[in-house]
Length: 80
Image (cartoon, rainbow, N blue to C red; front, side, top):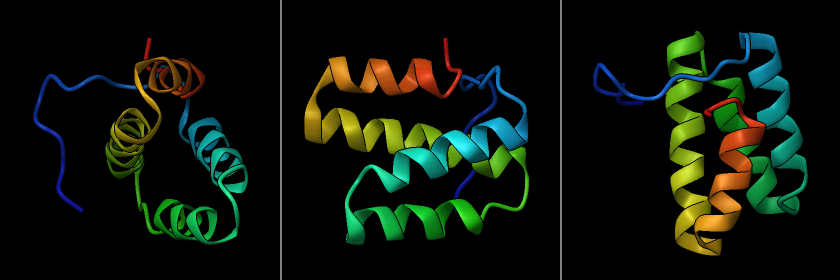
């Protein structure tokens, strides 16, 4: 997984809370999409990878559901 450039937004949540928030989001996405996201979350070895994934998922939500949904997820994941 590529890392984000320096200066990228960072989550205010500690690792375990961000991990849990992403896992909860995954469970809300239906069986196949949720399973794929859950696997991606499990593959993150550290906070940097987890934050990179979170920002990528926010981008995916923006593309699929619009800015309002992305903004809501961004706040939930601690990217204020």
